[in-house]
Amino acid sequence: MYFKLAWRNMWRSRRRTLITVSSIFFAVIFAILMRVAIIGLFDKLISDTVSLSSGYIQVHHSGFWENRSVDSTFEESPKLTALLDHETAVTAWTPRLESFGLASSGDRTKGIMVVGIDPEKENKVSNLSKKIVAGKYLDENDRGIILAEGLALYLKLKVNDTVVLIGQGYEGNMASGKYAVKGIAKIGIPEMNKGMAWLSIAAARNFLSTGARYTSISILINNQNNLDGLKKSIISKTKGEHYEVMTWKEMIPELDQLFQAKMAQNVIMSGVLYLVIAFGIFGTILMMLNERLHEFGILIAIGMKKSLLAVVVVLEMVLMSVAGVVLGSVCIYPLVLYYHLHPIRLTGDMGKSSELYNIEPVMPFSTNLSNFIVQGYVVLLIAVVLSLYAIFKIYKIKAIAAINS
Amino acid sequence: MSNIIESKGLSKTYNPDTIPVHAVNNVDLAVEEGEFTALVGPSGSGKTTLLNLIGGLDYPTGGKVMIEGVDITKMSENKLIDFRLKNIGFVFQAYNLIPVLTASENVEFVMLLQKTSKSQREKRAIELLTEVGLKDKLDKRPSELSGGQQQRVAVARALASKPRFILADEPTANLDSASTENLLDIMAKLNKEDNMTFIFSTHDQRVIDKARRVVTLVDGKIVSDTKK
Ligand SMILES: Nc1ncnc2c1ncn2[C@@H]1O[C@H](COP(=O)(O)OP(=O)(O)OP(=O)(O)O)[C@@H](O)[C@H]1O
Ligand SMILES: [Mg+2]
Image 1 (cartoon, protein in one colour):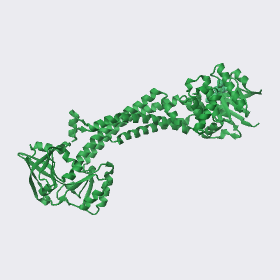
Image 2 (tube, rainbow over the protein chains, first blue to last red):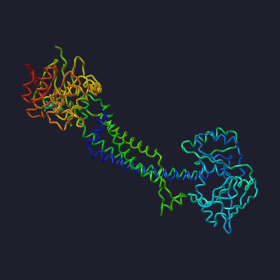
Image 3 (spheres, chains in turn purple, green):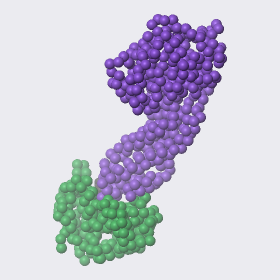
Image 4 (tube, chains in turn orange, blue):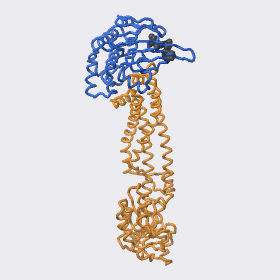
C-alpha cells in the first residue's frame, strides 16, 4: 500500500510528473548517445591500434620497448606459452618479430614497420586476414609479403609485384630481402595504413638473421577490467626471467590520454545535462512539499512516523527517476544498436579532423550495457540526494501548523 | 468509572516573551470512558488548543495531560506519534483524507500503520464504512464524495485503529444541516452502542443539543461544565 500511495501520488499532478519524467528521459537519451558514441569510437580505435601493434598486454625482453631493437629478442619458450594458455583472462596470444626497415620499389622508398607473424595465431589477435583487400593472406612459412594499402599505393605496388626490404638484423647484421606482394591489407588507422608490412615469422627470422627468436608476444583480452590483474599475474609467474610485461596504456600512453581527455569532456557535458535534471527534480520536490503539507500534517497526526513518510516520499521520487531512465534507455537502445551495426562514417571536417588525430573516421556505437546502467545510477543518485532535502523538511514539520496550512 | 483523560493545571501560552496569549489557562478536566462531550465557547476561547494538547499534537507550557494514567506531555515526538496511533482517533474540520486513496484504503491506512494483516484490514474497513452508511462508496476517492461523506469516512478511519477515544475539532463546520445531523447521529450511535468516547468542539447549537456533557471555555478557562 505504501508503494500504491507513492505510485498514485506520482500521477496526482500528472502534468508535473510528465514534465519531470520527460526531462529525465531526454537527458538520459542525450547522455547515453554522447557516451556510446565516444566509447564506441575509442573501443574500436583502441582495439584496432592495439591489436595490430602492441597487443592489450605484451611480453617482451626487458628493455625492448625502449630501444625496439631486434637485439632485445628472446627465444621461443614453451614454458611461457604454456603459461599464457592457462591464463583464463587471455583470449588469444600471438608471437611477433618486428623491426623497422626501409621498403623500396622503383624510385620510391619508405621507412616502415616489418612484422613477422604466425599467420594463424596473428589472425586470432588482430583479424589481419579479414583486412586483406587484394591478393591472399599469408600461410605458415610463406615467402611472400603483405603490405598495408597506403604503403602499396605509395610504392605503386600491386599483388605479385616485388618489394625490396632493407634493415638492421640481429647483432648488427645487414638485413635485406626481396619479397613478392602476396596480399594488400586495408588498415583503419591512417598512420598504420601508410607504413606496415607483414612477413611469415620464418621469413622474418631469415631476413633479420635472428634464429628461433621473437621480439614479443602480444596478448588479446576481452575484458578490459582484467588488464592490470593479468599483467600482475604474468609478472609473478615469470619472475627471475628477463621478461618485461606491459599494458597498452603503458606502451601507447598518448592513446589512453586522448581517451581520458575525451571522457573528461563527456563527463562535463553530461554534467550539464544532469544539472538540468537536478533542477527539474528539485522543483518537483519543492512543489510537492508545498502542496501536500496539510496532508503530511494529517498523516503525522493520525500516527504515521516521519521516517515512514519520508520513505514514501523518496520512493515516489525514485519511481519517477527510474521511469525516466528506463523509458529513455529502452527507447534509445534500438538506435544505439542500429549505429553499432551500421557505424556512422564521419565525413567533411569531422572526418578530416579524425584523420589528424589518427583515428579512422568510423563511429560504431558501443552497446555495452554499462553505458545505460551508469545513467541509471547517476539519475538515482541525484534523486536520492535531492530527496534528502525533502526528508529534512519532513522532519521539521509540525503537525498542527501543517494541518492548518 | 475511571478517567481516561485527565488534565491538571493545563496551560498553553503563545508568545510568552512578547504579547502573551493564554490560549489555555490552568484547565483541570477529567473525561470518563463513554462520555459524549462537546467543547464550546466563543471563537478564540481555546477549544482547538485544548483538543490539540489532549490529543498529544502539541506540548503545553504548563500542567500535564494523563491518558489512562500516563503523562503524555513528557513523551518525545516520535513516541507521541506512536501513542496517537495506538490510542487516539482524530477527525479534523475538513480535508481529513488522503486524496489518492479510496474510502476503504483511507480507513485501512491507519491499520496498515498498526501492521494489521491485509485480510483483517479489508474486512474491518468494510465493516466500519458500512457502520457509517458508506457501504456503497468503498472504492470512491475523497474527491468523489460529498463533504459529509468525507467526514463519515474520517470517523470510520478514526475508529479503525481501535482508539481509547476520538477527538473531533469542529467536525461539522463545513457541513450543511442534514449532513451535520447525520454525522452526529452516527457518532452518537457509536457512543451508545460501542461505548466509544467522543470529545468534539463546535459552534453549532444543534450539535451542542446532542451532547451529553457540555464544557464551555472562555479565554482559555472552563467557565461551565454541565452533564445531562
Ligand atoms: N500558533 C499560535 N500562535 C499564537 N497564537 C495562537 C496560535 N494558535 C492559537 N492562538 C491563539 O490562541 C487563542 C486560542 O485559539 P484557538 O484556536 O484554540 O481557539 P478556538 O476556540 O479553537 O477558536 P475557533 O472557535 O475560532 O476555532 C486565540 O486567541 C488564538 O489567536
Ligand atoms: Mg478552533
